[in-house]
Image (tube, one colour):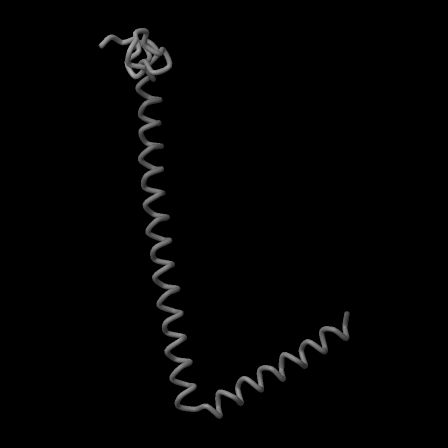
Length: 103
């Protein structure tokens, strides 16, 4: 089989896929800065991944805690729960009416 028969093997190398000549290599100072930027980017990515996971875990825990507490209040003190809902709705109604009257 020759290179002409196989499209993956090119008889003439593609110049865009060749390494640059040695005289076009980055100076050591620029290479050091590029290396530092790359390491910083990796550390920043790791930090934000960890922060995202922590926020997800915290919000899941908070939702579970609120759900458990509301279920317990509903079962232990249903009248107090209804009174709290009614009082909140009444206060919101008054606040909305005052807000609308001033506009």
